[in-house]
Image (cartoon, rainbow, N blue to C red; front, side, top):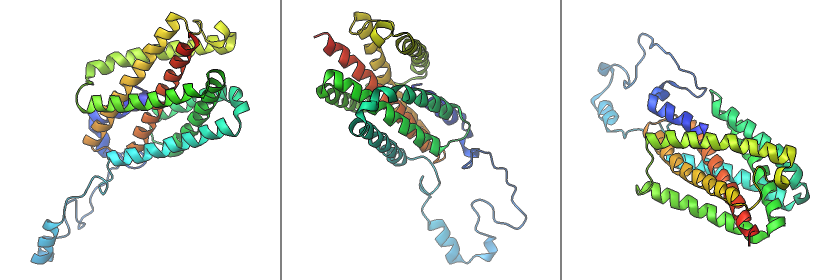
Length: 291
């Protein structure tokens, strides 16, 4: 999967265990008491008139929202809310305290990484933690964008934003129309590739920040063929991760997961889109620096 968040959701969708969870992620065990109407019953038939029975059978089926299940609209609205929080914080960093951007980057990276892993592996879904993660992502995006903008110009930022949106639309269309396939085999392969890249990224980050390798760019020099190649690979991984995210949302809706999972799905989308934007920004900066 693109990230542990969607990997967790796919496991729940495939297991079919979602039907036993309540709002706290616990499995309720209720035994009907004697004399109480059970599921699908409105009381004893002999106590109901023919008109009441007719009204009962004519009632429409409960919608996914009424049944408390995940819907695409719900995921979209929550994702827009999280992206809104991220953008507000990012703009505050870029326009209110731009001089603090170099100082903010490291805490933002560590906070995002720590919170992201905690959310992914936490047994219950915590909305406050997901919102806090969006704040840290805003700090990261705002500070990194400011640093790149100061060095390479605002045109680079505009190009990166347009490219990210274009890739998002293209991957959604490709997945929707079957041009981009998501299979169990591709999930396994890309999971290994992404975790391999994550290990490299962490090691490269340590080399850049702790030891100042290649003027703070990590193992490989800025704009070198190897560094550009790695950036292209990262953009490709993040792009395909979007298709897997779309597929996971579709599977969650089809499996009728509880509505609380819409927060986790929206959070997963935020993770992937921010990752894609940062990788595109880095790639474009290297290509521009070679001109």
